[in-house]
Image 1 (tube, one colour):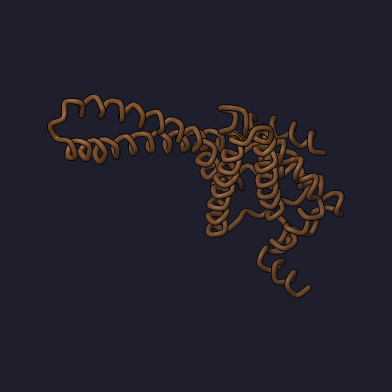
Image 2: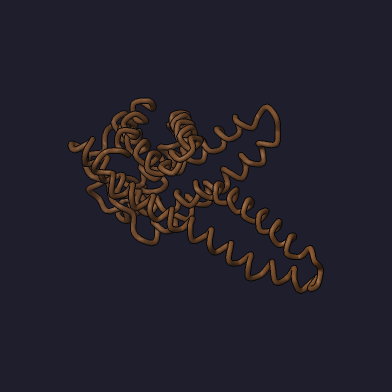
Length: 252
């Protein structure tokens, strides 16, 4: 189930129907990262170098120190941007996850009902949530990199759990109220976790990790469709508006 879903998702992200979301994600991520690069560089020149000059105005080593400091700042900025590539691409791609899900549902499961896209405000909340999850996962994994023996395992376990949980619930929320989506994830927790490990493996590959959100969304849509079949199918779930389904869930 997991490997089949992963293979289909990998095929999907490079297919023609996905190209619009793919290029929008890569293009916006590149623009944001370039803007950050120039913005932080400008901030250093505007703030740090004048401060150094004011502290020691006539010292002959100020220019050399400024050059060294500029090089150090550039190196630190490069490392920071390398760390931010994943989170930035995640928050940008999250704006197009419903587009990805719609393509997968339409192309691979035409016999099933189409899921419902999230409203603007919940979608923005989801984007912030994805950003926080990726930041938290990578911070924890980075901290554990200093602990020999568990660093690589920590990266996969932390990211596998967090990414698996969030992306599966995203796929399920297109058909179910939040409480039902969380309950479904709980019943298939082991399957979702191992699917999250596949996503973490994708995230660990340089450059390819820019496409992690698109791959993760496609994988979890495929996985949710298969899980839903085991649960009795999706017929009827998407015919009731989400608000009405949530009210019905509360009544039950």
